[in-house]
Amino acid sequence: MKSSGAGLIWLSLTLTGVYMATRLKKRVALLTDIVSFLQAVCVEIEFSVSDLPFILKTLSEAQLCSHIFFLKKCVLSVESGIDFPAAWSKAISENTPLLTVDERDKLLSFGLSLGTTDISGQRKMIKLFEGYFNSYLKNAEIRCEKFY
Image (cartoon, rainbow, N blue to C red; front, side, top):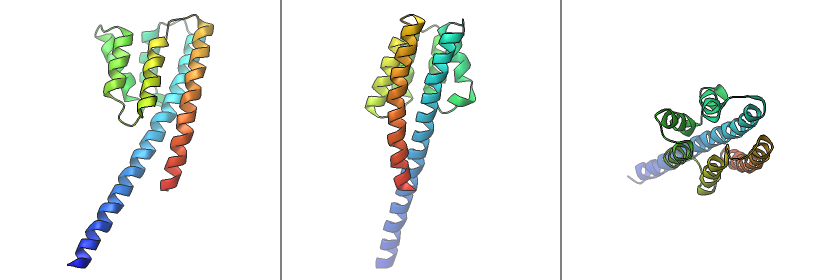
């Protein structure tokens, strides 16, 4: 009886560890894609003559953004007639369970700032957010390494 109880405890701890490690790997993948997304937005804004909804739609379909589920939701909302800031806020609020509150707040702030200044201002703003998310990514990678 005691050995079966100990076995169940060991099994539950093992499964919890596997779950946490999987979640951390998904978080690293999401943050990696967010950094790539920010870099791609910067390039598109700087060199493309496309409008913001088209840029976001194109990037939401790109492989480099495959883990950014909120981007697809945002694009669908914009296509259904919701204005970009509201669509972005709703998508971030409802589709980012792997992110911390601070990371979510930064994404919300990014969306509210996007498209509000000239190209030079946009580039500077995107680089600022890219720095934030590179830092978040490094911290997530460090935590992930502890589990492996």
